[in-house]
Image (cartoon, rainbow, N blue to C red):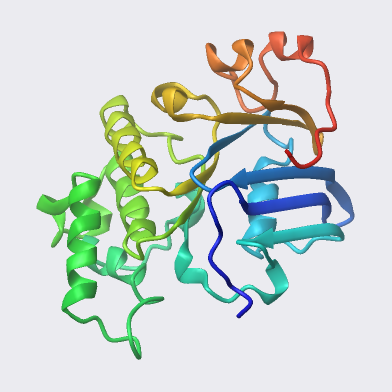
Length: 261
C-alpha cells in the first residue's frame, strides 16, 4: 500500500530541492523542508517570498518544476489518502460567495471519509465536534455570510478538522482575525497537537501561536534563509507589512539546511 502509516519521528512532509514557477517567474529556488510527526512548523517571510507557493506544492495546487515532494513517505503524485490531510486556505481565497450554513460548510470537509458521499451518524458527530472545538456550535445553522472575519476563519478550520486529519496545512490562519478569535484558534491548534497532529502553517507573525512552534522556516526570494528554532527577531516581533521583512532578519545567516537527520 502506497499511503502507509508513518512512525514517530518520520517526515509527514518532505520537500527536497523543490523548484516552482508561477508563469515564467521562479518562486521556489530549490528549497528543502521537512515536517515530522507531531511537529509544528511555521513558514515565515515577506510577501512574495514563496511561503504560500511552498504549501500549495504539497497539496498539488502548484506543480513543481524540479525536486521531490513526499506526503507520509509517498511521492505526492501517487498520494491518494487525502482524508489524512486537512487544508485551511487563506480566507480571502476561500470565500466562494455560495450561500451555505455553517454546518454545510463544515460538513463538506467530512466528505473524504463519508461513504458514497452520504453523511452518517459518525460523520455528523465529527462535524459537531469540529464546531465545538472552534467555538462555533451556537452558530451551526447560521449562514456563513452573516459571520465576522474571525468567525469565518474558525469555520474554515472546523471544515479541515472535520475529517480528523493527521496533518494540518494552514495558509495564514490568523490573517485579519481579531485577537479573541486568534486565542480560540491557538487553543484549538494546541488540542490538535496534543492529540498527535502534525502542522505546517504559513504565518505573517507568530502571535498567540508562538508557544506551539517547534521550528520556523524563514523564506526569502524562494530560498531558505533560516530553518530551526524561531529566531529571536522573528519570534518576538511581527514581520511588519507584506512587502518587507523585519530588519533584524537580515542578521540571520542564510542556510541551506537539507533534511534533518
